[in-house]
Amino acid sequence: MNKLNSRTISINALAIALVCLSTMFLQFPIPLGYAHLGNCFILISGVFFGPVTGLLAGGIGSALSDLLTGYAQWIIPTLIIKGIMGFVIGYIANRTGLTVNMFKIRTAAASIVGIIIMVVGYFIGGSILYGSIYTGATQIPGLVMEGIVGIVLFYVIGSALQAAHLPKYIQRLTQR
Image (tube, rainbow, N blue to C red; front, side, top):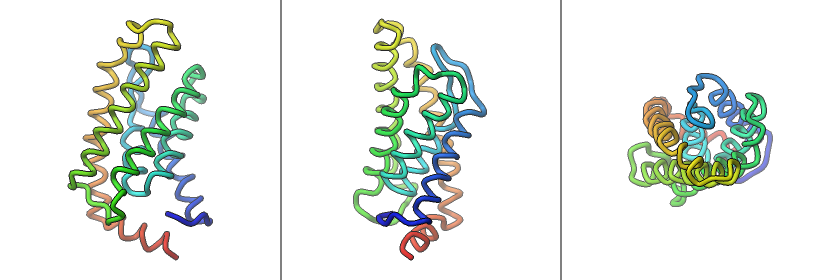
């Protein structure tokens, strides 16, 4: 998605909304926050639509959900962490410019690196926000579990989207 046109803006807006809503609903409390399904859709946004959409969907969608669910102290860290996560996922998965394939090594690598960025980012963010490395470290097991669930759901939903030829449709749609 190189061009900025109404289709690109619409895809980005839908990706942001999807991440925000999937983060807000189906929340599971973990120490100092909540686990959610938003990471699955950050992965989908980055892998299927590229680094810019991954950045926007991850950063803005997740930060909006923090704002709307009462975690205002996390808005700025989330904007940075999830934005970087989405960008890196999109960059790694799409760096060769080839068609998306859910079962390529680069897709798995993008997923794993993205989740590592999230875990490390929230460890650092929690340590700063709560003034203690130990407090930040209490989030790590929940974040790892959240990341694993996100990757599993990403592969389930992403495989269905690939089987429905969504990547080819997106490519045709964005090249017009």
